[in-house]
Length: 205
Image (cartoon, rainbow, N blue to C red; front, side, top):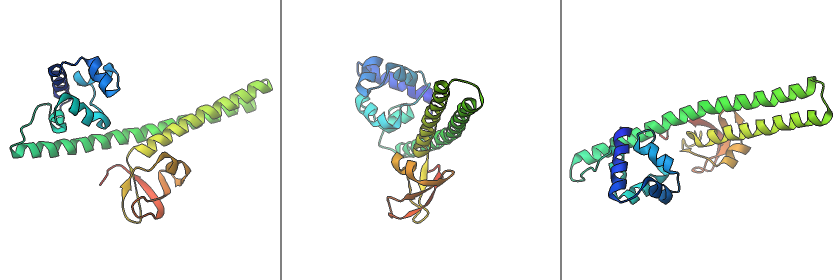
């Protein structure tokens, strides 16, 4: 997908509907800076607001992803729609891979902070209250980082049930409380309702 072309198309449709960037942003409950990034081709609208954006601009999702109004009376429309959907899936998979790489960095950094603060508190001379503060600060920072990394693992990609092969995004609670070995977690599948060790995968299919 051509982000520059899509950005110009969004700007054109916005102006046709007599909307400023700020007004469009307000309707979507986002910042006008985000709209500006779309129109400059620096970012794409999130899939969660894409339908609402198209409704406001009076275009279809396929129009948006093509960066132009596509006629519906020929086979090209279906071909472009299929191509755009495949491109979106590809972009999501690539974004999920980057997020999972970021998860490793955040998790590792959080553990290092936790151990570092604990080491300082244990082996350096200091007052008791300062020692307690060091340990508490290390625990808080470490736990926040680990919780954030776990959120990334929960939302990026899918978990695949070993029993029925169903792939899905579980709740944060399910991931948090599940026994795990790396990114493989023992959870209940919402499709077959059986517990199994479920492996993290990137693609939906």
